[in-house]
Length: 88
Image (cartoon, rainbow, N blue to C red; front, side, top):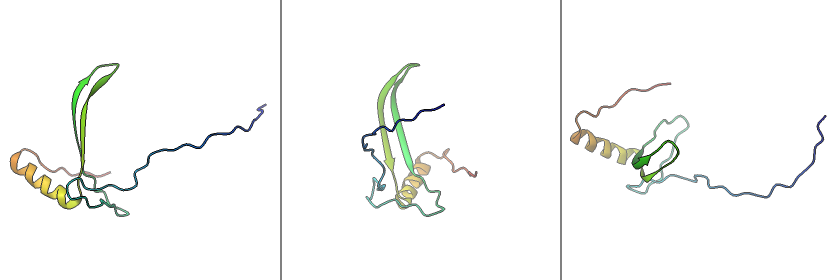
């Protein structure tokens, strides 16, 4: 048999993403209903051990227009970088 007790849970606050802005042009990055556009670039540098790690991380968000400029630039300096198809 379960005996229940009602307890008070204090109100909490949490940080949620309100909107995402392009780090290059500051325009809002909006997603359509069926949009699959994602443009996060992550750079990490540091040390990783079995029980801990530390370092620095840089995250950059781009809108479609700026990401096109970045991808064109990357393809021009790194000819071995190629687009790949994806699906799920």
